[in-house]
Image (tube, rainbow, N blue to C red):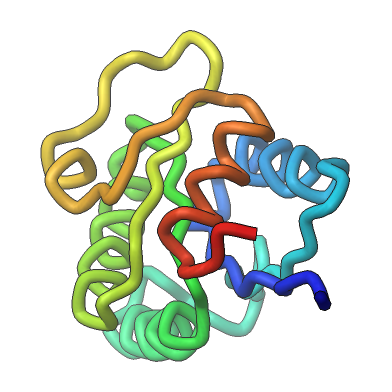
Length: 142
């Protein structure tokens, strides 16, 4: 039986990308798990997210990528700009009926209410836990 390849969108913001990069590395190193990264690039100099046009452009790109994903992984953070974009990504995931998995970095215990309400599941910073949640919620137990 051929192994499923999961299409995953990892929510993040450009100024707060360290945990997103670590999460990508964690998933990449996990054996017997294949995935495509549908996340937005960490930096696109042509999109000015401070302008209404830039926000609309980025929101459109996010909607397309989230729409193609099997699930959305969200890492909680406290940066105001980060929260604004994560909230937009969570809303788009709900609009597209995509499962939202909250991944708690080590030492993080609180999750903003809007994230907790949207979450299909909240998991710790463990590749096995994250992959198990993806398999549960993205439709393939294998």
